[in-house]
Image 1 (cartoon, rainbow, N blue to C red):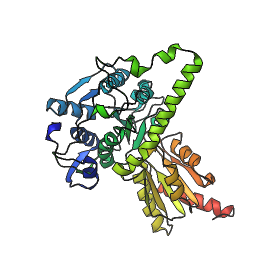
Image 2: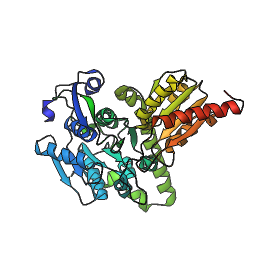
Image 3: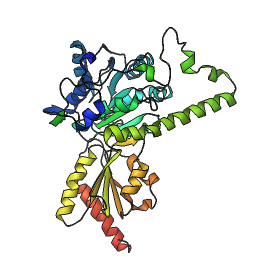
Length: 389
């Protein structure tokens, strides 16, 4: 159905084009995005809470929106097969969650190393013992250095839009890296909310593998030209030099993605109430809870701003520095036990003692807005006691 595309500039259409209202779940939003993405192949393996989205995508295959679709043996098999399909020049999609992410972990740096623009949706959940299927995004912290681009959706609307935007960004010739689009499971996937969808006939332009910086697999392109197997059989010096330069190129490609993220997503962050002395910096559904916390604080006479971090990789270091230049306090609420976002923010900023790592909730617990508001008030009070602002 890609031949039905009447949109010469899908990126501009996504940002500024007309939309119609729909009352759907986050899983259905994923389906609606894939429906419009001109995907060649989708490969599935069920794991809660992403199973519903890939079931719905199977329905898209039955209706002719996708050229091929099947269920693989396990999550690793899914990611290996998706990789093969991408090497062959196809636009591909898959999704996973929690333990599925960890079982497939080896393939994510392989995707990046092969410079394949695979888009994968991650519906984040607990991966701890005792087992948990509840919302938690600790797996994002484990994926930070795999080489993929990482975007974190606040809600179903973000989830839908970021999947389409991820293809537009990842498939740029100077980028050509895999992209993970993350949402906090259940909070987003199983919540029905009002969203604005592009027209029913909206489609991304078909993927053109001739624009890729690496050749596709075919009978005229021996695999050795892509997999670089000879490097593994040479001396350690040759192998390390070649691999180090390739790692640097992957990192450089992620840096080059910044301009495309600004173009297609409107920026790596969004800032509300700039110039505030107090900021809450968050990603994912913690952003929604932070919005409510700011309403509580404003009702008590405390002025606070919000920084919504959309891109986790590449990380918006300079944007954060500029946004909090005059701030005294930066509170970072998270849905995980480790506090990976707070660590990233602290590593990006001078005067990083301004950063409060918390509150953090996990194991499926919701985050009451008053918990964030209390953290803000505690940070302000502690500074007063210690003679600060």
